[in-house]
Amino acid sequence: MDSSAKYDLLRSNLSELEGVLVAYSGGVDSTLLAFAANAVLGPKCQSALAISDTYPESECDYARSVARDLGIRLIEVETHELVDPQFRANAPDRCYHCKGELFGLLRTVADNRGLRHLADGSNVDDRSDHRPGHLAAREFGVISPLQDAGMNKKNIREVAHMLGLPNWDKPSMACLASRFPYGQEITEESLRQVATAEDALRAMGLQQVRVRTHGDVARVEVSPAEMDRAWELRAEVASALHEAGFAFVAQDLEGYRSGSLNETLRDRERLPS
View 1: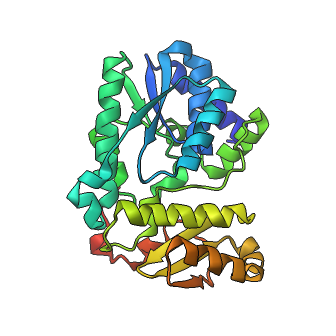
View 2: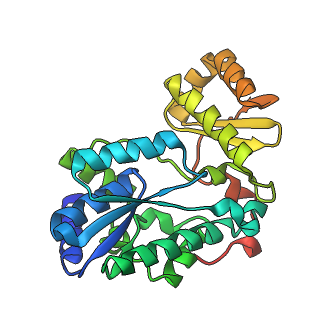
């Protein structure tokens, strides 16, 4: 089944819902879902943007802009992961606690607004890797319409491009907590440090960027296509990351890969997803 056919299936599936609240971030996955659900369900679809210390303000502003341009009905909620000691401790189940708070809050919002379903933008590719947040999603009855339609990231970008969505080629942007090795405490200050560092690198024109923080060391991951450019900019990169508060700066020779810090987990530490 090609991307267009999968999108038709997505729209058909959405049309059968009595109402839905979409967990929206401004990334291409949740944007396509929100756009399709809004088109099919009209006022029976609303989308929710979570405002959090783990989500850069620049990304929040971008998400608001995209929603406004596409006519997505957007509400905003605040989450407070850092008050949870289990989240701050950053064990391998960190994402479970984060998503548990988010989906619990959104479930209440959906119920209060008479929206029967709560949906996220997970796609087929998300079934791989260590993703304990999916367990929390199941516990709160979250549906994943993109997955149900068999859409992977490639399908989503192709359809988003076809529809003219402004973020069809936007690089993936994960929660800032994913920059911390398991066991390293997550604090408000350290989250700001990572956000400042990544904003500085994107301002230099680097697009797919992760600044993984190992105490005083910043390990910079960029896409393989950008590695030479990052090396050419090494003096500027080092200066910006020193300014952000890191003592040492290193460029990862393997380049960007999603969830690279999960590579340190043993099988017994991986939660079912």
